[in-house]
Length: 331
Ligand code: PHE
Image (cartoon, rainbow, N blue to C red):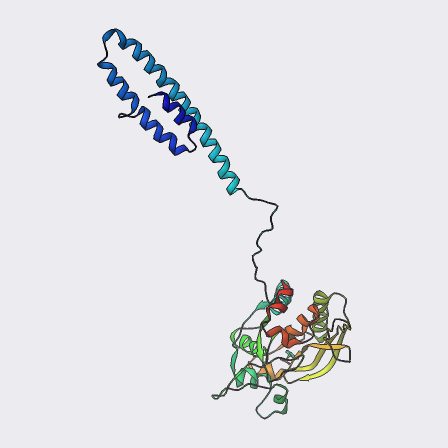
């Protein structure tokens, strides 16, 4: 009867089967225990012979079982490793990473330039009142220059700021000179064509110091240095211009891209694109914020115009259509 178990062990194919066999053979109610029990009723002279035989079986069965268990365990482990192993030669699944919008990425780079020069970063309000957006900036009611800014008005005389210049006023009214600030943010105008969207971004700059300390030459230097930082070697053109809040004022153009084959067209036939307005702060502005014996310069940079040139985007409006195919190109 015991002999059968040798084959049982040899034929086992799973580790669980080994455990079943162990219980059947070596367990309290197992076959060995039963055989030893039977031995008790055997005649005395045969007992030692039977005991010897049984003990021999016991140890060889145990040895066989142990070896079989190790063999099966090793085999199972190998199979498992084969199943779970990573095939490094297979293609992985790519996870999509998000990225900054090209306008935000450009704005960050612009801000970095001024932060490195110790300009502090201010934010104002997107919904503004007439005083901060116009009046204090030397743009009295009914002044024709208000037409320059196609304003979105709310019913209650509030408006969407048309430029970041109101942040100049808010900053000067809340702190004493000297001032060295920039204000990046969204602005709004009723305008829509290849180079205009109703919402766009500016970075305002304002520097105020003692009277006689700030000159147009200082302004021109920093604007040119900034443009070199953004574009490397680029042609810059200062044009005399008018803003109610600066005198003298200038608009600045840089030479623009015109690609023929692939259709990018960032500039007009003139070969220049306007990207900023600047000037020496008008005394009327200082008067409105009750600053005395100071001088300063101010500038307003168009972020989208700069992003368009850097990325050679032909139509500004495409930046705000949320077309993932376009945005993916800026990862
Ligand atoms: N606020 C002006 C505009 O939006 C730009 C500007 C800012 C010009 C500061 C001069 C000084 O057109």
